Length: 439
Ligand code: URA
Image 1: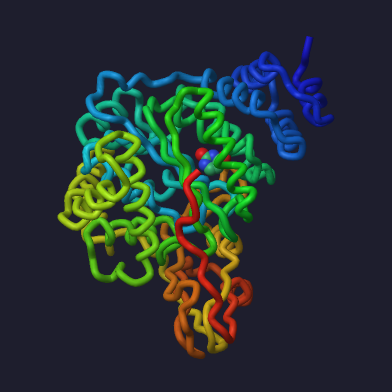
Image 2 (image 1 turned 180 degrees about the vertical axis):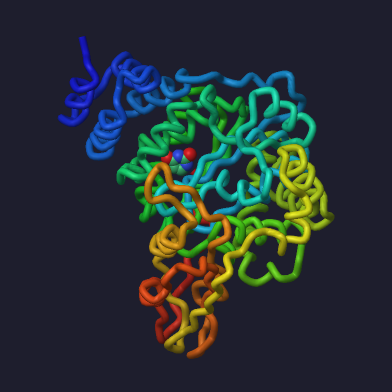
């Protein structure tokens, strides 16, 4: 007879857990028989010892079975979702869900909150006053049917164990772990009832996977487990060597997303990578949903629906359907921005050679835009706006970033951290590609 502590010990000692043991442990978390400290020790044991493919599949299944699984078969149209493994300034979902819906897909999107130094779609959406990310099953399917996309978080009934483990991992140093990320993403995505999934696997200084080798391992784990669970899936490896777009922070990222949805000129320079990645992911989703025959057709369709305002119309419908206050997103300057605004400038001339993107994510947490412990609330109004991307030329005194902080925040210790996180070099180094490969 296994107990929570014997299961933890077995994993700690590097032995393979049986399907029943994993199920028992996960059920114990649900029933309260397994305490949070035991769940955390279990996560740490997995972090150090890893898991076989069979164990990862069993963990994903057990997490999925801990809650309900939505059946969306009555909803017409191909149901395809996208999920990112997490990054800094990654607000793609906010643009992509309405864009893909405007192109003919149904996008049932169940997202997470900020994790470690990375931001979360739910936290971003909640910076729109009134926006409800706690949809019931009925509300979720109704919004999906009516709008074409719905964006929600886990509830007590759907993927509840991921919700719990996600929050524990966030504050216990157990985020960067292939089997845990795999089970977290796929249990949520299988529970929401999607028929296909496009995975944006991030690699680089702001990703959980810092090297191509690690990111490929994660992508392969996700693809293999999805295949075992009969979920059609494709993964692409994309760069997280700098923040995506120009904004990092919750409300400020919603602003940037809206500028792209509205095709505003202000977003043209620093948001080009964000726009390109969104179009590419949309094309992948359209291929998976068989709306188009190939990526070229998919990109064309996505481009035209962004340019003609169709995606923006769907976004407004979505905000309205989920209780958000439309007058706050249009015009965007009604979204909150913290009052203390400071612009930090380049102290050297040269080229932006490297960004420690994880450190930039941590600076946001220190401003109050992310969590240090489970119970922390997020300040949606703090954030950063970047003026330069990797490879750009800078002169001494040119603005690099504007920071939005609360009045009480002492910024004196943050500026040296920021200046260190952005390396300016005398010669222009090659800039990493935005999209590396498809797995
Ligand atoms: N996204 C998730 O949903 N879970 C993880 O563990 C990492 C990214």
